[in-house]
Image (tube, rainbow, N blue to C red):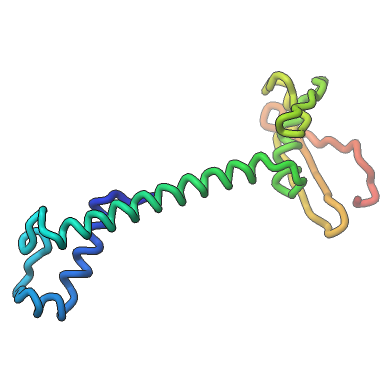
Length: 153
């Protein structure tokens, strides 16, 4: 999350004021802070503001980039353990899948929570295969869906 311009400038001016060489050059003594020594329109203050504003814009750009990348990853159709898990939870009994050409995926045209029977999913990557165990829930009791193969695949 991007810091504000004031936060960035405060960090920079605190580091600037803690430097003993700078304090000696300006003749600063005691516990003086940046705002009490330098005017808001001084060249030092103006430069720190420009650098802080630039850093703030860069941090915002990186935050947006990170958000865009995470959105693309979440929309990715490469079957990972997380994808199998979310797909199993999204299963709707009796509804047909519709192809979405924009996302290159099959989806349900209407999401109906009452038709989503799967409540619990365990997905295990076995190297060359994936094992998926699913279960429903009815009145607080777990229901097992044992329709698959029994040879452990």
